[in-house]
Length: 264
Length: 264
Image (tube, rainbow over all chains, first blue to last red; front, side, top):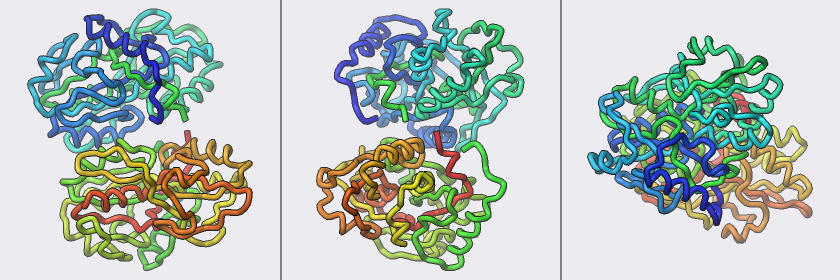
């Protein structure tokens, strides 16, 4: 990033609402400010994860990495990563153990957690909507649908797993434009990885997403798939990672960084 | 990257020439194929370096990271990272110890070297030249000039140091176009970090680069500065890193990946 805005009041307000107990998907909140996927891992797993992210930059574009034990980030000065997301997932031995609205207590189990903030496709939803392309999950007031695919990520150390994608139905005549607009944001997943033909990704039923909520796909629309920052959670499951804290899918960390900072 | 080309013969030929003893800057060699900066560090330093790169993505865009002890890369199947660059630098306790054309022997000093391949601005020189913008160092048959700046990188663990930039003189009326063309290649340094006003970067004399060769800046031309993959070498010096092997500035590793794979 090259510039912080003077006034990120909308982003701070959204974080404070989450800190005070709001539990809701963050798509559409504080529009224009970058939202992030999050994963915290013990220091011993940090190298494997950073390498996994480097080797899979489409699903895992890293925007910040904390020092071990830190729960702050220069992407949002004053924020507390343990409390300012609306909903967290706690993972033990590769399985979802619980969802919590405040991760302070579970965070304290490990003194050396390294936290990764990963770009989120919500960042390019604003320019897509500005171009008149409806984001169906926002129109429907639900979470974006996400699917585990049959595409393996490139493994790193002890980490492997499939790529997860998010899906937005796009009118056929706007698909190329959606690809070009999102493609200018490579730091937040960039261009789609797949357009149409969900079966080729191993997705048999669009109405039953693995994460998030189903959305209507209308006649004349094509399901467009973007690499998704839930991919690290799929790796946690596939790799039997002993301990991790992540955001709950769709419940992101809202930063003070303007979306436009990622545009190339 | 999404696709390897069927025929990377020009890249392989260039690597073989280097393996067989050719010592020369690689700008202009195997045009259209991605060239990389290289740094190999003992495993104990790999986390600090990968974090340093993540925190400084303009000078240090990581294109591949090897497994410890490996000297191969999927960016160029069959290549030997110990031999296929034209010239290497060996660093001991933060100081340049020697330059060698074959690093096999010095590589064997450490069994756990992790090798980072970092994007190089030579990648966008091809589209710049295709747009009719002369690359002065190629026209002059010399190495690109590089300068240590007064801009500190964001530190990571034991690593800190200044940003290094490469400079190309561009006619004033083409500067905007050069910025836009290179900006579409964020994986290989992307848009310039600075246009004109070298003194603001702490560069007092363009004719005395810290690395590479000076080039002529003509009337009506502006010095344009791009973040440079020699930045890791500046960090090795500033941080007193005990051992590292790098490419010699301008003497890059040539991969089989087409430049266009990095364009967004």
